[in-house]
Amino acid sequence: MSTTSFYDERRKDKSADRAEDRLDRRTEREEDRKERAALAEIQRQERAARAEEERRLRKEREREKARRKAERKAARAELFAKLGREGDTVGAMIVMACGIIPALFFQLRALNGESLPGIISLCLAVMLEAGAWVATVSGERAKREGRPVARFRVVMWACASFAAAINYAHAPGESGGWLAWVLAAASYAGVFFWEVRGWGRHGTKASRTKAQRRADRRRRRHDRRRRRRFPTVYSRYTDILTAHPFGTIDAEEAWRTAWRDEHGAELATTARVVARRGHADKALAAAHGVGVETLAVEQLLGELFPPDGGDDGPAARRSPGGPNSGPSKGGRIAKTLGRKGKQAIGKRSGRTAPKVPNKPLDVGDIAKVHALADVLGGAAHLSVKNVRSAIGGGNYRYAMRLRDHVKAERKNAR
Image (tube, rainbow, N blue to C red; front, side, top):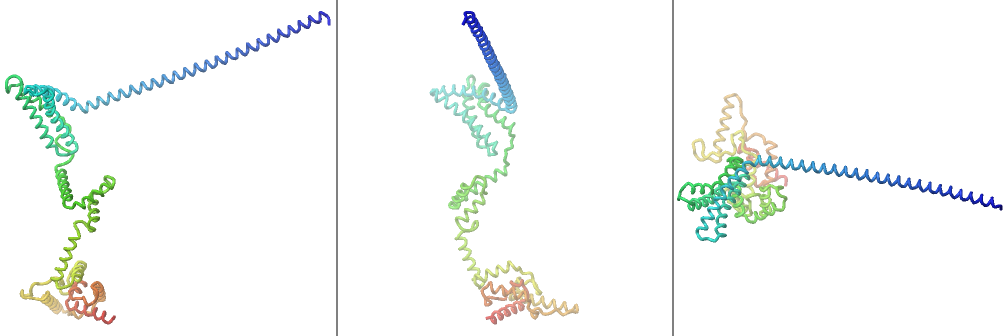
């Protein structure tokens, strides 16, 4: 290899190396530029995000500020509205404070003048003022709820009058002078102006009328009598009311249920009452000369088939005497006269009235008497009286024929 060729190769190598270096540097510069561009883009995005976050926070702060401002405005409006509604209360409280403070001061001064310890004087003075206010507030609540307020008013004015008497008697200056009257009035000022406030709000009309309050008092008295007279039923009654949710069961229905649970009967009925009724029924049946069952059936028939009169007038009505006020048997004379009168009318009108005792037995009447015999336990218990009650009245002989007919049918049926 010649020297020229060697140097040429070296020049070519160096030239290639320089080209590669330039390419590397260009690549590095390009990468650096891309990195800077990427970093710049990231920074731009971060700045944009921070700016967006700042805008969002600023809007939130503005909204929060506006909300708080609106709340304060609403609170002020509510306060002003409340002050408008409670203007009488505010004015009354100012007047009361102006009256209570001097009254309390001179009460303390008067009590301290009696050589009492300071704490004792303070307690006594506060007791009078606070007692009046307890009665005042309690009376106000009672008025709102419609309860009587007289007792609260008595306590309120009694405490205020006691405090006024102390201030009047121990007022400085001339005894009975104007200052004594002013201090006495100061003890009345608080309760008086609170009462004026109540007049403006409630007037003189409570939520319940006088009649309603009277009814409530009668209801409470009735409840106390129940509790004393029937303690076991009342205990069961309170158990029923307590077991049910409040207001879901009527109090009177609970009382009826408690009575049935304790006595097994309807209201006002006990085993003793039932026993007395049984004795009374036996005595009444003995007076009528029949059995208890017969008397009960006759009373039932009397209720089911009230006498409406037959061909001979009212069947159940007994005349105490005959036509001439003489003794008669079950109104027989009056009925006979009635029948004869009808026959006479028939003759005068050209008609002949059939005799009732001889008229054929009605199938319906026979069925009624059969039913009566079943109720009584046999035809042997049939009588003319209960037969007439069963068919709704009628002629005595007709009822006797019905009785005999049913008895004969029952006898033949055996």
